[in-house]
Amino acid sequence: MKNATLKFISTGIFISLTTAMSHSALLFSEHDKQVDALLAQMTLDEKIGQMVQVDSSALKDKADVQKYFLGSVLSGGSSDPATGNTAQDWLSLVTGFQNQALQTRLKIPLIYGIDAVHGHNNIDGATIFPHHIGMGATHDPKLVERAERVTAEEVAGTGIRWAFAPCITVPQDAHWGRTYEGYSDNTALVSELGAAATIGFQGGKLSAEPTSVLACAKHFIGDGGTTNGIDQGNMVCDEATLRKLFLPPYRAAIKAGVGSIMVSYSSWNGVKMHGNKYLLTDVLKNELGFAGFLVSDWAAIDQLSPNYKNDIEQSINAGLDMIMIPNGAGKPNNYIGFIYDLKALVAEGKVSPSRIDDAVRRILRIKFQLGLFESTATDPQLTAAIGSPEHRAVARECVRESLVLLKNENHVLPLSKKIKRLAVVGVAADDLGIQCGGWTIDWQGGRGNVTHGGTTILAAIRQTVSPETKITFSPDASDLKNADAIIAVVGERPYAEMKGDRTELNLSAADMALIAKAKTSGAPVVTILFSGRPLVLNSALTDSDAFVAAWLPGTEGLGVPDVLFGDFKFTGKSARNWPRSSDKSAKPLFPFGFGLTN
Ligand code: BGC
Ligand code: BGC
Image (cartoon, rainbow, N blue to C red; front, top):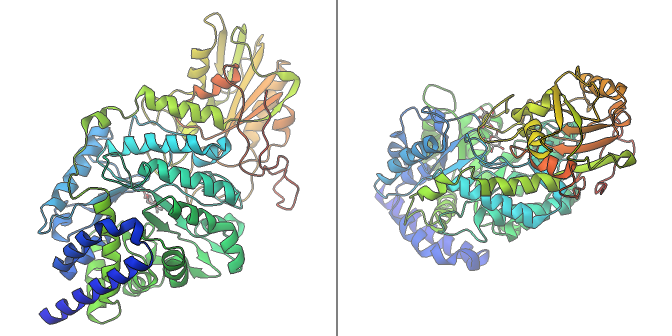
């Protein structure tokens, strides 16, 4: 037993030196000595623990972090602290887990991960940015970088140093419910903005700076290329197409130094990505030289076969370095079983010690780079700055730049701030939850006042116009009397992955009726659309004098009247083709890059 351990430790070191020299000597050499010295002291249990990431809600006893040497904990979209949802609650939760890790024999710090996909969106009172589809419409890499710098600061303020972002999907079919998580349907634009986001999160390069947050490019690869845009579906194409449409954003993110990549639930020509050694190891790690670590998606390996042990064998051998496990004791496929099975697979010779060492080495390298071995402390000033006016000002700028003006008949826009009577209609005008969309506080998002500190469009308009302006608000457009202009706010209700797929892309009949009703008053109608994808507008476009695609702007509603009332000009350009009808072969109504200026 002892001999076997010694033998594989020395093989591991040998492999580490050769791989480090061939691929990423420049990037990672500074920590390799420390990593190897640590690895040489680790038992197999300690190594396997590093490869396990458990959801916070599955860790009924946080001492399991210590007991099983867990390398990572995450909070999924709805896994909040039991104590509450403030930044302080989050900091305490994360610190509690971290303290467990620091009590292990080798004191290897934990890396905590969270879906900060449009701001630090699970935390009450955090700054919520536009979803990626809106950021894509800014076509502004510098702004994307600044937005993610702010997000990184808010994430770091809760003791977290890892964001499962940016999503660098290139969604081809807007029926997909995750279309809004992608910047664009254009590969080059996604590559440019994804690299900018990576730099924003990590703060230039990944470092021991307290606000350097590990970025995670996701979901590798082709998540946005599935047939009919079905979530977790199958992409059917040849390798040349896969490489042309979906690989460049990964190349760009790796060049920007991205330290982690999440694998996609989806399949390519019937083969699930989590078991695809060719793409994960040969292409991503060897050909592209990705030296960070690969994390699985949420319980995604479970889909590989009916047998969990097989799933583990396949995915680890395919190149997965860390496995995301949402289940705790008493549930199938839980982390305790995972550890038991992976250990057995090593003993049976089905997973090689060198594969384990490679995975652990990749994870430890990132932990050293983040300076976690020196300190895991959180600067209270970062916590205090969550949702600060300075941060919100950046998000407001993003909102402004993301708005795409699709129509502006007779120069209805900009409206005058001195307008006498303004009728605002549509429930979405006063609903922060609709304005933020999915992945906001909860996994699927929610309706109403989902978070503190944001500004709805209605409130934002009130704050912008002259005190003399009389504003009426009727969700059903029942109060249009004597209005000089009508602002109709319509759009999709919040959704996220799995639940957001659609079979048609029409704006709802209720929304069309609302706009038609507004039109009957005779006053000019300005329509603002909240949506996670371009929708088929039909009569809503003809019934509107001006039409603004506002995507899912987040908490900073003031960015909308900034532009509606002329303090700023419209600069956003659609980062997707805008469909004319649900018939995919029809020529787009507005092509990629469309956006009027006023
Ligand atoms: C999603 C990922 C996310 C993960 C953790 C998965 O279901 O596909 O994008 O990072 O959950 O919440
Ligand atoms: C979690 C998400 C996860 C999803 C996948 C939800 O319960 O909150 O983070 O992505 O499950 O099934």
